[in-house]
Length: 206
Image 1 (cartoon, one colour):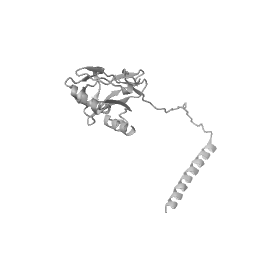
Image 2 (cartoon, rainbow, N blue to C red):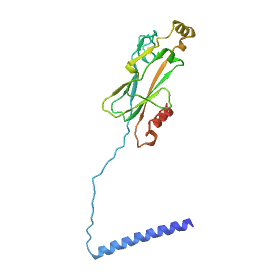
Image 3 (spheres, rainbow, N blue to C red):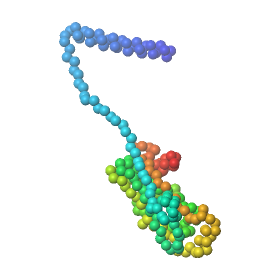
Image 4 (cartoon, rainbow, N blue to C red):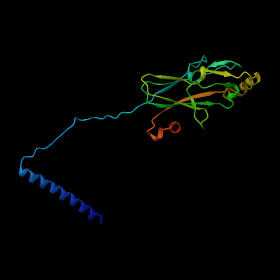
């Protein structure tokens, strides 16, 4: 039955085409036809892609390994220590959600306290995750992570507590790991329309 319907439809198209040709031929016999023709200039659309480039840097400490990604610091109760992780969004990057994730070792806050630099907002429901919006710019944009580039050793730490760390081995020393992420920001694209969706996407690609 379907085949018959299709044949009928093609038959109608053929009839319409024949009628059109007949009309054109009859008009030609009757006199000269002035065809009205208009043409525009061609438009070429080239589709490229945007990009986001970020870096995370930190000043190397004098710990002998020449590797700023594994800095070591000496703790003295009550003393502030320079710690200056810096996220750079490179020039001409797309609008983005910029994230930093700070992973503290167990018991870290017993020994060290710090604050976040201005402009970062804690991402609700995600411990240690902070974000900010960054707009496209022809210039590189730099963002400090830790307030005043300083962490502070708690003044109430005792010698016994430090000795206990030494006895347990270096793997028990307090550590702070900083990781940066950037996700394109576009309210018209469902997958990246909110900061929560962008963070989920960043984790799925990590």
